[in-house]
Amino acid sequence: MTANYPGTRLRRTRATAWSRSLHRETLITPADLIWPLFVTEGSGVEDPIGSLPGVSRWSVDGIVARAKEAVALGIPVVALFPNTQPDRRSDDGAEAHNPDNLMCRAIRAIKDACGDDIGVLTDVALDPYTAHGQDGLLDKSGYVTNDDTVAVLVDQAINQAEAGADIIAPSDMMDGRVRAIRMALEMGEHHNVQIMSYAAKYASAFYGPFRDAVGSGGLLKGDKKSYQMDPANGDEALREVEFDIAEGADSVMVKPGLAYLDIARRVKDAFGVPVFAYQVSGEYAMIEAAAAAGAGDRDALVLETLLAFKRAGCSGVLTYHAPHAARLLNG
Ligand code: PBG
Image 1 (cartoon, rainbow, N blue to C red):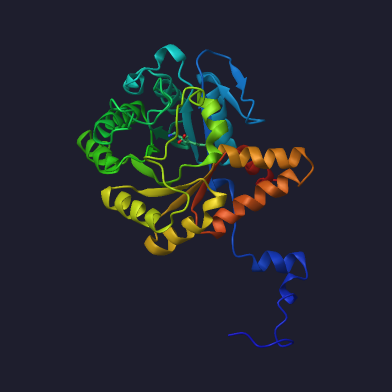
Image 2: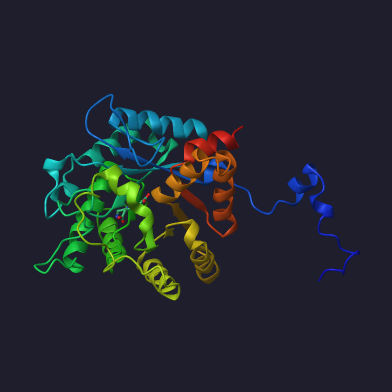
């Protein structure tokens, strides 16, 4: 209960910086950030991504340098995505379970260099490995099959865990994949490998620059609406999360971020589990474009959007702004 004006003047506590600081409800720190990184072949390679200004693909040596940078900045986790060379993409995405693929080499190199000073999160889905750019296997009609795809995703996840991945993040939206991956991890004695499931992942228009970054955009025909969620749905997101938790996910992700903050909040309120949001490539590009156009101050836009995720109940945020935000937050 609050007294009426003028007994209560809500502006009183806002009048000075010290008081605003004392009354602040939400805090963002570098420890809340997960830094997504794109890996490419070669050595000494930095390959800027046109649609993601300020973000590059790095060869494995550069990825190790970024991981060390993350440790120095206080960022606890990096997320890896491979730009698989074209001749290693195939209809069945077999490169995903090659123990010496780009992803596994990057995981091993980071773990060799940084050990447990940093967590390595790896994406499980076939789109960086398929010749058709879909996240799963196609049947004759072009439909992305569920159960056959899950079997391959399990192999992919185990391949990553064997290489040293700390958090397996299935982003494919197949039904039942969390249970299958969890059982396989347990059987392989990877008892402490976490699963952060992309539980509520929407068929979104905000993924364009990412698809450029992993080289799947030009290959993709059609869309991903038969497995990723309809942006119109919220109740369904709660069912997705409920399933993934029951199947053995340690944490869940909502994706994209800003346009889906209501989902993050509902998930947090309904289940009380660790929730993460992915501020995706298109969101990053929009902030960069707005700043470049003089429509807003870049640093302020970055910090305000990240704070919004924390206020919505998220434990952390995957964001391409992670190193920049961490530098700002570290002063
Ligand atoms: C692949 C995957 C995508 C993203 C993360 N993992 C793209 C997609 O589903 O098409 C998007 C991330 C971003 O846009 O930053 N399954």
